[in-house]
Length: 295
Image (tube, rainbow, N blue to C red):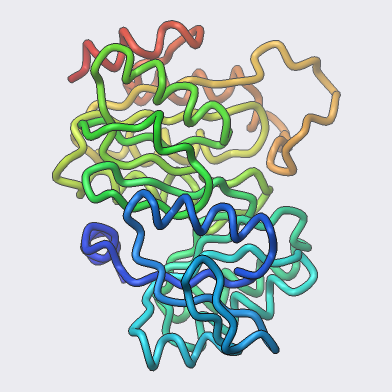
């Protein structure tokens, strides 16, 4: 599945399953996702088949929901110790997009999931992601608060969950809505880093401006800048980097906040973005003016 096929899937408001639906957290977010308009057609919890959660039937296996309800997307609210098994089950059953909300998945397990997903052409968002939202469709997966998002032309990809909706709130106060917003995930290895998200935003007909919210550590921002500099896209890109005041040599909160030699520092990311012609917001308050000017 390529970028255009993923967009077609998302804009169709596809049938979704919730793995781990019987947990209190999953119940809460299932209600919110359904209230926003997401079509949840089943839940999965081994041994709980036949129960109902939020009016949704629970199945023992992903394969059963795919066969009976045509499910194409799965969001996982499962413990880290069983995340690999649950994700691989979805891939094997024919799910096309997996959203891994779960934190603390062992790195080797994540690598196994992503390798199999890549082999089968399956997109994986996360791990450790707040999910995604498409205001044009009334479709969301995860726990991004829908009251902070509205229809518009700004696509947001962020390594920080809270900054995703903080920035959306600030944009909406200026009547600037969003086409797509998603959380990349806070782990060191994720299924959809910036360089894989950019072609999706570039292909999206509703997106006019792309906003990347990065942070100290990791090389995702440098890779994104390389893609932009190579002529990969035509839409204006605005970037903001959190963690500029992070003390050198200190371990930060996200597993992805790792520095690799001379890459991964705030300075290297700023150089890369500016060298690629990206508009960089020096402070949080600068994001909205830059985005407004680019629309």
